Image (tube, rainbow, N blue to C red):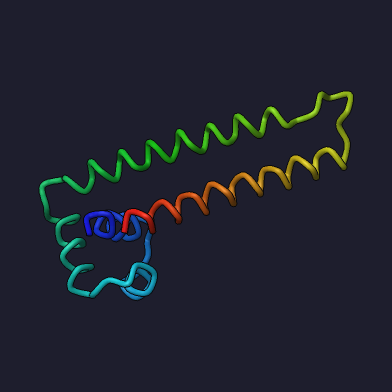
Length: 109
């Protein structure tokens, strides 16, 4: 259940409202309110966890961007087709990372 509570805090931090959180995570308004109050008026535990999560996500993103740079062709081989291939690869990598994140979150629930 702690994973859902952390997800609630993360979604609040991202600007989601009660209805979106309730529908996505399948939690009650009481749980959402409890987490919201702890985030706002608690002693900072959720903030520490959320900061750590954001650090991990930033590292993942920079790792993904590093892999994308490996896909870039040398300047002499550039062109519209190569640019399109890089763009598609970038989209695919982002999509896979997002899917992994969602699957990991559901596995912890």
